[in-house]
Image (cartoon, rainbow, N blue to C red; front, top):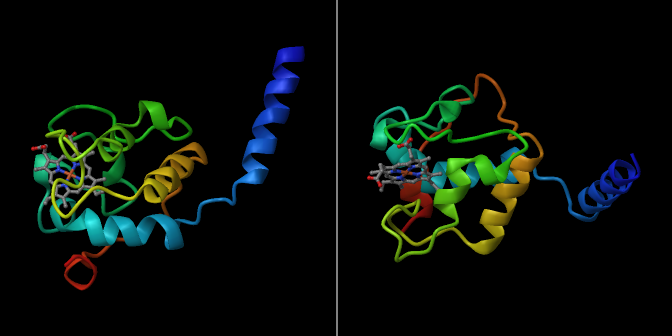
Length: 131
Ligand code: HEC
């Protein structure tokens, strides 16, 4: 019981220290500029699509669970975006890895429940943002 109380207190402190992640501001622009080109309505590389709330949860060829709400360590997406350029499986495979800050935001987003607004279809903005 004691452990539980201390654990919870520590968790609440950790959360309040970090500003919450905002899907529209922190997650959507990265997905749209770095991922949707290959995993959206037009193409689903690896049989995986992440451009809407339903598809982002469905495993592709790997059969690894892409997202487990609350558990970044069990989420394949987090594993892939955390890899380095010399790893063949890193996502995105082109244009450079995500920044540390972006990866941290994704982890936090998953921790906070990986909320993705229903009915929203993300669009590829890579031509605008990826050079
Ligand atoms: C240039 C195209 C391209 C981009 C951009 C890209 N991917 Fe991928 N992705 C692939 C390919 C190809 C595969 C299939 C595995 C492989 O060949 O490495 C894949 C596989 C995956 C898988 C595994 C699906 C499964 O179950 O097999 C996930 C998860 C994933 N990508 C997430 C992302 C995320 C998140 C981003 C953006 C940060 C991203 N990808 C950007 C090409 C891309």
